[in-house]
Image (cartoon, rainbow, N blue to C red; front, top):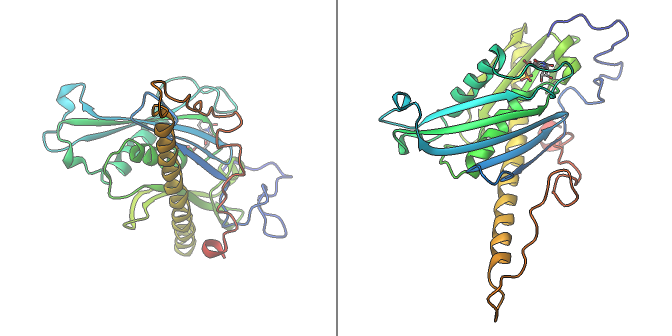
Length: 289
Ligand code: UDP
């Protein structure tokens, strides 16, 4: 944020388009898939523009160290981690101030949404790993984490959807990309619970006027609603897949052996569901018209 752009870089062109061709209120392509990790209780893989994030949920389970446990409710612990190869300059492995901050804001965004009082003395652990980063990773991680929580069957008031808005070249824009994040004037990550309307994350880096702030919020909230639809679809697809998987595991009529089930799709290979046309809310007239 706030870096001086190279002299030939136009963040907004004469037609009002951004460097990646988007209109100010368009988000990048998003696709997500729930239930990708066998050993996690719940999981989600999400691609959002150039971001690639995986989320894994474990729990409710015993709390270690035990003195962290709460006799009245579950504790929600999030870890945000960026892999060393996720960014241009190799990221030094291990926690740093930024990842600690993001882990903290993620825990604080998810804890009030999970029905923690149903699971006293337990921990719900949420791990998010950023495999590739292109700005907006905290929103991507939070969006994936909430799908992974639902996939784990954790009761919640609703899903959490997140998206940033901000300002570049004097224009309020939605979902900043890497250049916009570097050379822009403001970045406002927002997360809401679309079902209740609660805002569970609101940060601001840079300066906005009141009018710009409300415009940015309006863009972000509309985007979160659209992302919420994709989250619900990913969960529906997950349970459709699970039902089909169970059916294929049933013994074949008249024989002891089960019909060979279809192999688990592998991300990046044909048939993984991710090679289809990305679902893009961009250009959805109902929301962005
Ligand atoms: N970034 C990077 N190296 C780092 C941290 C961040 O290259 O050590 C990049 C990465 O692409 C990230 C972007 O800077 O997505 C913006 O980071 P920010 O702290 O604003 O968080 P984000 O927008 O990812 O939530």
